[in-house]
Image (tube, rainbow, N blue to C red):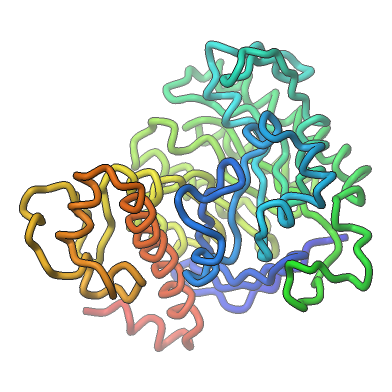
Length: 388
């Protein structure tokens, strides 16, 4: 069953507002998706994520496959039920994590053989196996198995990576279409899930997105996009970014690929970025983005505010009674001072990571809300909001 994606408005500058109807949530786009690597957005409880307005989060196929195991999660009703998350979810293919295990992997046409970073045990991921694991997890959206191209990479290396990604994309989609009805929630009575709090599913069907690769080579990116569009996936992601390439190269790749992707399907840029970047990409026409940066930076004391980046560990905040960001209405900024947040970091209190992460996520989600609001205005009014 085709994904239902309602394009509500397109701005002359490229940005667009849409509704993405998924089994567990109608997602308003453009949207930022917090990353929940092992079934948890680090340090942030699910009810807090809901209060922040998170519509969709990510699960990590590689990590959940290793621990607690996809079959165990299937037996417990799927990942939504296992982690008590009632809204939408996307799982990655495992390709990026396998890419990060460069010293522990062997790649062939069939797939990737790798050793677990946990215990050294040997495992094999093929496109078919990646689909089986993701179907067992039961996210609303799964990703085709791909081979992430590192940076820098020679043209020959990028070409070979593209060849594998295209081969694996075709196999992923074929296997997905044959087995997508096996998601754990497919046969729940009355088309309802207890965790959905009474919401009726918009769709019973999991969706599968492709991943455009090709490194920083424009012709390879074009070839990848054009061939994947011919395969007719439910949506399209631009992968292989945020792997060390200059910021200008990331922008060039996105600018090159976006016009080649179908107007009537979601467009997703994986693994980006800083606050100014996600706003820029959303206004270019990107519908979906994810990144570990808000929570990872938070755990190290780097916070994003309306006035720029702030290192809360700085000594100058030791007696600063001001809120972290006076322009922010999140629960952290309403209640706690900079001095207290610094104290928590200095004392090594686990609460520091939680409060910092909540604020950073609120900042990211707030950016997307403002972009959506601006795209909901009539064209003339929207244009006027960008003027000084």
